[in-house]
Length: 462
Image (cartoon, rainbow, N blue to C red; front, side):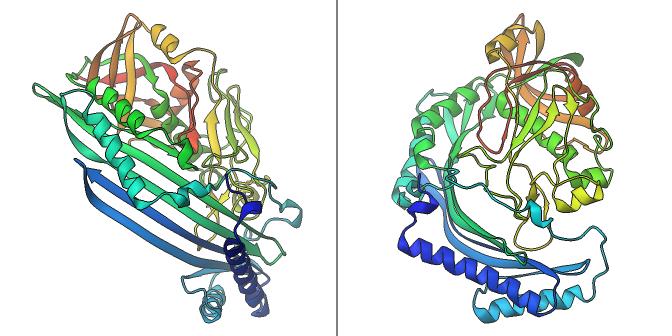
């Protein structure tokens, strides 16, 4: 892993230059009368290639950079953005924000964090790997082709493909504010995926597999990605409906993380203070099974939800959101914390313009002791979900209804594929009804969850 201490001379100069630009923007805002200000600069290079049946269908290489400033005049605030990082471009950006602030109204909760809250995690967090930069275009195309070819070679029933893709990004993030806080860090990412299509008789199915990491060396091999995608699509052939019933439902690990996405939406401080969350006003109350502990941790090296500080300059940290079924914390930035008379949890997240919202770090459900196979064996009859379809989830009320694809369980064994069914419940009942949690926690993004068993959901089929 390349670290800040191993930057080349050119990279160090560029980082220093952008930090100076951010500090200059903040200084200009203060000179224009702003009581506070904060500037974010992002610069990066992205690559994307998609291939289908071995042929390159789309290839994109792009560089981007931009700066955003937020100014405060007491409790009035405004923002502006520019892609022109020349002194004149920065001056125009600052002036635009200052002019807009003059016509905004006071917001009693607006403001920067308290001085005592600033800081950042020192040392190498594994956010950047120079092997992503060293990959050539030819190598990236080759990996996409090999992933697709590997899936097509597994079985003659896999006779088509929706393609394979390789994507990568390297970038630099800079933040400065009028309290003298300045920080910057580099990040990298890459991913490889393929989507095979299989046919048998009148049944045609698709599925996929993907691998993502901060370093190309940590990606699963193209052969593995292709073979895994092939195994997944083959087990879907001959899918059928099942009768409408209430039965246990298992979410495989890749799908179970969607439940954490809904939990995040519900513990997001912005939704809580607007009372647009079924968990508003529930701090300290039991909201899930005793088996459930959910953690948000922005300090875990090498993961996608990790950073030295949040987008307000508050150090990243580990926050236990649900502790053995009890809601123990919301996730907050400075603004939502003040609205709720609480303290920020270091979860501010923003783009280049506007006030910070709330984001998560590495949010995960702590694993149990059972294997995924043991969880399946514990179910006499039920549904093992491998894909969810649609967006029928309301985190204000907790209502849950989504299309599902998976495998039916009979006497503890995966018996046959299932499609064209809907699973329904409420998030409240689902969290309370988690009967088993497997040990297969694996981070493939910033949300991660093991295989979980929910004691009962309504399955609508025939």
